[in-house]
Length: 101
Image 1 (cartoon, rainbow, N blue to C red):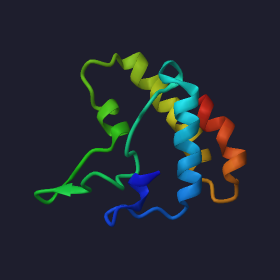
Image 2: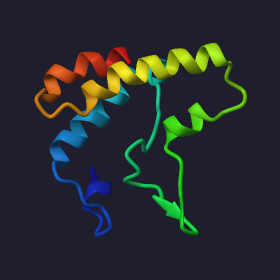
Image 3: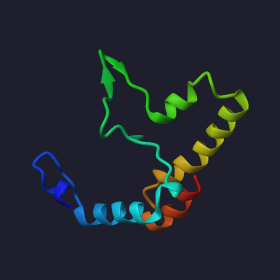
């Protein structure tokens, strides 16, 4: 992909990224759900000395979400986030759980 050749683009494994992008394209828009930048690699960590919220934090603090929904989301995060960050699991082992989440 020509976009990968730009000086401002730094990718550890370009072939893997291209494989993922091609998979997204092949899967189509109807199967795509996006929560972006949860690890703050693209967005600011702080602004004017104050910690910026993550996408999960924004959902946690949204007044439009009911208490019941917020409780369920918290329970799901407790289950799946532990799997996501578990260093003893391979990507292949984590993958089905991340899809389920």
